[in-house]
Length: 457
Ligand code: GTP
Ligand code: MG
Ligand code: NA
Image (tube, rainbow, N blue to C red):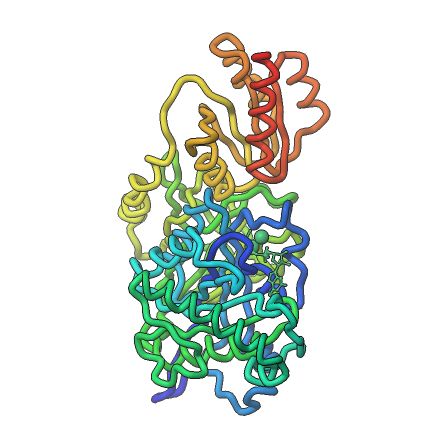
């Protein structure tokens, strides 16, 4: 940047809120994608990232203010699940972001995971905007695609306006009960401590351009210090997953600095520090969700802030939520390894030590943790002895076979969103190991429960 000019990186914005408030749909609306309809059960079960370049934001908001000065190169948005079991991913999102959108369904009250999200954000002092979503569901609402709410509001009957105001005030009161002042953003001139409420519809796109512009302008106006780009690499592991043709990869969010192909990196692993070299750096296409399987663009180097998929040897035991460090030529590798393992304590107590339980296999580290959380929850209570990510292998079947002698019904694999080949299935049958597959964590526990009930009868 030239002297006197700000050198800002893209703000990282997390989208949070109770299940089915429309987080993914809102992003679909901005991206022009259909991620939500492709989700098993319409549930988000992974953390995702999408990069919106400034030129796309300008295009999407040009009717509002053609001369809007965008000082940031873009916006990196992190989608989070709203289901109860996924607190780990919500917590990770709130740890990473510079600002957030808290989505509330206008037809419902503030729900538990909205309040949980709110508290996660508050704890980290992250400022947020409320998207009061699904306004199109108000009885008698007349839609105007992508229009600003004030324009749409003039089209509505007095009954609709009345209902809108009543529901808005109810939400404002519920935020008040949480100790927060909030206001409709068009009436919130000062934008100080009072939280902005932006009414939206992810279906008709109403107020979506306004929301986008507000996010960018607000961040570049009030968060200059936080958003000033620095060279030192700041990078967090989001997910660990198997990608066909690439082996085990990690999805990371690079906040600051530059990563290069060939960089020597250190990552915190459950079996000790992982030292490896970046084999390939892949980015999703702009305006595309990183968690959706698709084509990625290979890069020689990537500058923050950006979501990146990294392929390298030995990443299997990498732990999501920990830092990825780059070792420069003059840096001390031993020191970096020590540092990398410092935050392991907080993560390790997530895995309990027991001697009888089922084996759990999942497609990603994040969904594995959520699944474990779910299996632990009071109404479910399924003991777990082993875990893994990626497809089920013969060696997993052999390991689980040991349980046949300890507790037969627990000689079971709960496989979430992973492949089981016919060969592996045959071996399992032969040994008497049960495999349950499902593409939502809730169906998986249900299948297993009915199996247990059937055995007992
Ligand atoms: P989780 O990720 O599972 O927590 O849900 P989510 O918050 O991402 O919600 P999602 O995008 O999956 O939307 C949930 C349901 O609400 C879907 O059926 C959407 O089509 C619907 N929906 C989302 N936004 C709107 C909206 O503005 N208007 C209407 N009418 N329906 C909406
Ligand atoms: Mg979602
Ligand atoms: Na959903």
